[in-house]
Length: 73
Ligand SMILES: [Ca+2]
Image (cartoon, rainbow, N blue to C red; front, side, top):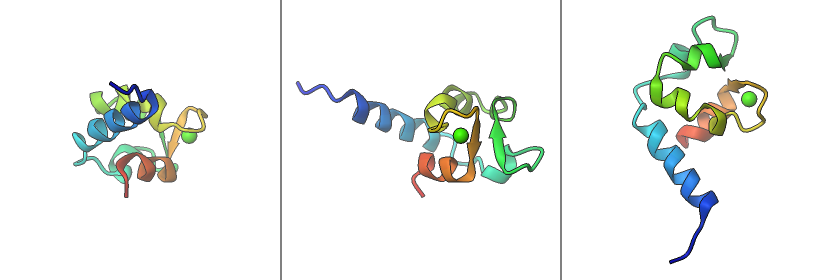
């Protein structure tokens, strides 16, 4: 068995976010500042659980770019 932790982690992330694909960036960005904060992400359990992975640059907020990367569109 090959172990590919990074790939596996990416697949898990994709699966996780797809499970919540009814979410839109606009919907999550409650205060419409163009970023999703930890607080805003908390409205969706699965999205919140993947927050650290989606927040690629680890600045504590998810930009539209990071959101699009996470959902693969
Ligand atoms: Ca970020």
